[in-house]
Length: 59
Image (cartoon, rainbow, N blue to C red; front, side, top):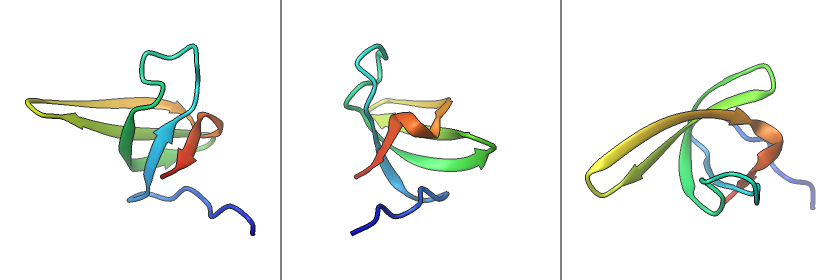
């Protein structure tokens, strides 16, 4: 089965062993070119990070 495209609203997991966000789950807010803005929420903090789409995997 083919992977579904990552679209705004998708839940994704970061798969980059070099990133401090590796293994974190977040929500795609917007996509521009080959990058996605991902919102991470963790209790009392929220963080919006832009990263390459190829480092993200659908959750």
